[in-house]
Image (cartoon, rainbow over all chains, first blue to last red; front, top):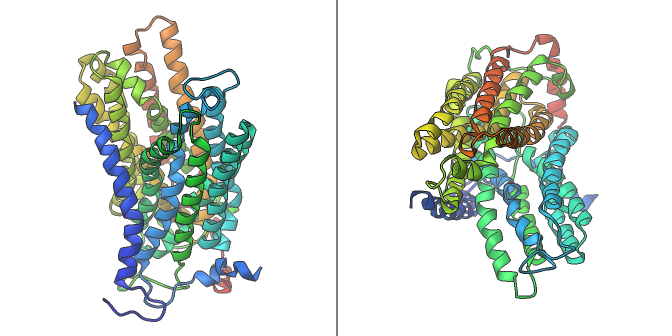
Length: 41
Length: 459
């Protein structure tokens, strides 16, 4: 784990923050792609 | 109030060592939620059978009544972004995000009450007015903060946030369908419960964004980066006050650039499903058309990030030239795709067009920053959002009415969109000239440097 200055950011905080928004977004993209595949059937 | 002092701008100033890469997730927390607006149509059919359950009964709301909910929300998005833009800029992003979360989440809860007592006016007030204000506040709240954190890549930074607005619909649509299925029973549709869950979840999600957002300390710069010694001609290092910016021709030229680009995209976005089936009868089924709409949503989202990022390399003006030239050519080619019966060509044309529609939204904040500086870019962006509201009316009206006129005059359904496509191409040509005429803002509009620095220091 990286050290941080006072008020600084840890790598874990970055991973958590990006996962918090990235996982729902990825889920939405996968759902949409699954529907979009119907275009090619 | 002391209890709310954590919302104050000075409480959000980042300390040493704060990573600017924490700010895009904060912005995405807001935009992924408010992007739900694009998926509101999921509720339309269930809300037409709240009384009849399996089918519409007398007293049930009609689709035309329900259409006003989204229209009101988009209208109040534009109004609130314009009216509260300066308050957002001066109060800081956390206060604006908190207010947005309250309005947007609260809008859902009030709408749930409207569904429960079956009074559509409560829903107009809840999701339409209050939710719309939440949309406007949330849309502009992280923009100037991101631009200040990423002076080296402002297009990419705002592109990431505004991509979230496109991505929000991708999450909200399947989530809402799942919640409706979960709460529905043979005697109950489950819309009110779905609204309550969405209101609470979105409020919490947006508050996480408000908690982690930070503004850079005055004079902060990315490590190892300094402003280029010689700025490109169209990039200013000065600032223009928000109401002064509204008096410049540049603001109104950019207003038309956005309005025309959005009009061209939004008109076909709402009609993509019907258009693909009518232009290719027997070749594109309803299921395939739904897949096409999904694919367009993905390109809309991806375009927001990719085009805005590209604008950091090729410049904002050149990016919009790409939109207008490429868009004109592609719209003009769509009728040819119909005549050739080439579904693949048709799909390719629209996917590129819709990526540029998304890119138009996400590149505009950086364009404003180039022209008017960073100080009031959020507030100026708020006023520019009215171009979106105008396009939201203009685009669908043009597509729907021209199609209806053509069919009424005996044009086959497969060819009924041709005139519309040529008209969209014409709008993009006009947009090209608006973009062409954009010149740097005259120095007389710039804020005095001393006053400007004093304002920043006071904050």
